[in-house]
Image (cartoon, rainbow, N blue to C red; front, side):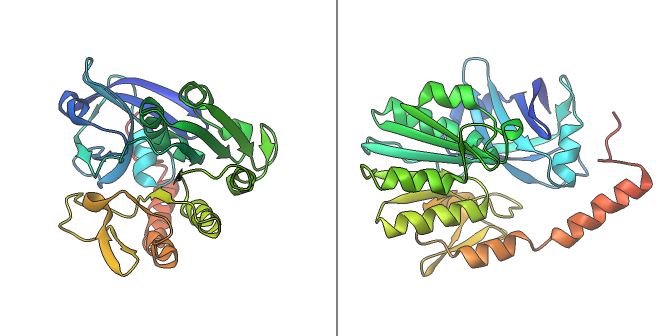
Length: 281
């Protein structure tokens, strides 16, 4: 059982949990993730480790209420317990001195990009971070990202904070200047696809972090398979980071919506029954 030490709301429907998990905190590295199960009846979902503290034995996760399980997770309070957490999983980010790096976090993607940016900065890179959101109300982690970046650029779809527009528009301005040695992007699939297509036209190395449907997280079930170039890879053990220029985005996006109808059905059933997310709080 993993106790929630702290719960904090970052924006509407976006939460940060600090969880007691000493064994995971002792081994976690930037870019890795966990798979959790809220209770014994719950499904297993992957969430990136936002931060970890080896001394206190805790990890932090940030998640957005999207489907049934994340809504159920959001029902928990400080002091409550999460039944299962497996991790750290996946390959850690390859941290080295690249030179000039542009790191992009779209929406909740600002959470998984944070530990990577921090590590890249500590490795001696010049890091320009771009974080984007629909509006100022949904932008998260502005302060912590600013602390670990040489320069932070904020953009919002509606222009309510920072530059108005998408992260790709801000990125294009940066690419037309001094070319970076690496672009790292984490966020919604369409955003990462757009970033990869843009950087391909400038011949800039680009890494993306993929979060496809996962079940066991150990490479056994094959649910998280993605096509990278001519090869099939398992994101849980061979990722989550891949060359954005080689990802088969069309197949990945199609597979990501495989259970959308079932998700709508269960949420609809809970709403009709008055059960909400199914918690007992």
